[in-house]
Amino acid sequence: MVNVSVVIISKDERSLGGTLDDLRDHVSSADVDVLVVDASAGRLEDLTREHPEVQWVAFVPPEGSTKTVTIPEQRNLGVLSATGDVVVFVDSGCRLTPGWLDALIAPIVDGTEAVTAGSCRSINPSPYDAITYTDGYVEEAPTLNLAFTRAAFDAVGGFDESFAYCSDMDFSWRLADAGMRIRMVAEAQVLVDWGGARRQHRRSWYYGAGRARLYRKHPRRLRSLARRDPILLVYPLFLLGLPLTFVLPVYPLLLLIPLWRSRDVHPWRTVSDHLVYGAGALGQLVGVAT
Image 1 (cartoon, one colour):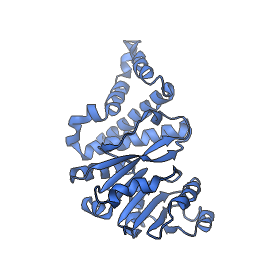
Image 2 (cartoon, helix red, strand yellow):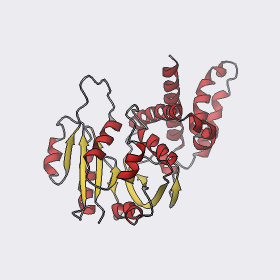
Image 3 (tube, rainbow, N blue to C red):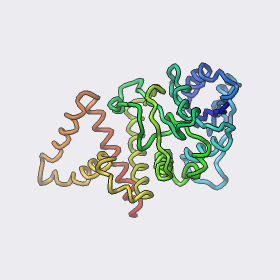
Image 4 (cartoon, helix red, strand yellow):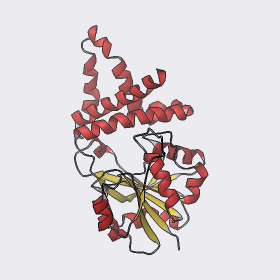
């Protein structure tokens, strides 16, 4: 029998309670345990009382650390604290659909895969509504809904703690570089509340910066940037070209192209998020340059 550990990282996220409630319906076996790595400094103490079945691991930043975002550190601590041969990550606040866990880990349990990823669906309107999922292999996957063997984790050395955001994508890329494919299991679906426009814009900025940081670490992947990450290429270039508006007033009308292409999926919100994403990428590059 394969032992499985479900790991969630959290910091002051009240929505964690809903995820843990859902997990009670999925964790019916003694071979599955749930672990939360919490950086809330006791502010979620009520949730710890409501969920005694969960192993709570308090994350305390090392003395002298100035990092405010400790996502990769918490992920590494979660895996190191877990006892399972298979580790499952799901984001705090995700709601779990029936059969989620069994579907996600099945290809690993039967020995055919070392890494699997599940799909997600937005609870509220989001640019991510445009993403479609089919079974097969994917080039990368976030820890939003991810499972892997402990051997796979050890093979690539875990999550790179020099990152703030996108350490999970870096983890994916290093798994691929080590010859491990990520199997998409579309029926292993979670529901995600991405929050309002302000929260999404904040996320887009940091994801843009994190994505640019990824290509700094993996420069050989720049050759496929236009194919893999057209948004990361097009929107920073558009923003850099904004001064052209002084001599070419119609320049901003270029945005009509992505607005039309995303007309069926919240076009204005999608384009505004992509602009912020591009600005975050530029912020990362400028920060490096200065």
